[in-house]
Image (tube, rainbow, N blue to C red; front, top):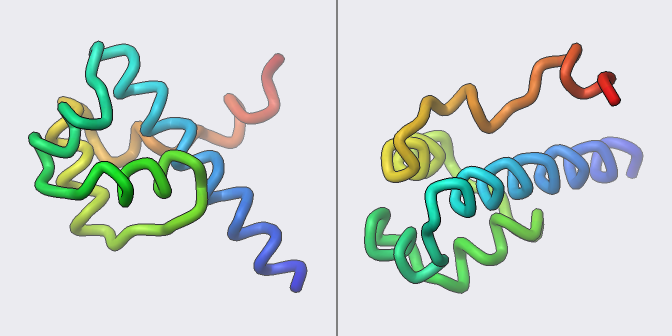
Amino acid sequence: MESAVKDGGRLDALGTAIRKLRHERGLSLRDLSRLTGFSISFLSLVERGRSGLALTSLHTLAEALGTEVGSFFPTERAMHEP
């Protein structure tokens, strides 16, 4: 059970990072859907931490957002900074 809670936290953090990058680029979910081929409902689930995604899908999202996959994952130091 503890592992599921930790994984849920990781999904939340990933979703938050994706949403932040999308907003910074001025994209709607519809825009990102068109760029990636993923449905709006799937992207919404990912951004809310309700669904995970495969590494290949994460790569597709990174390309659509003009970033690297690593940008979705905060460093340990950044997670502990105020």
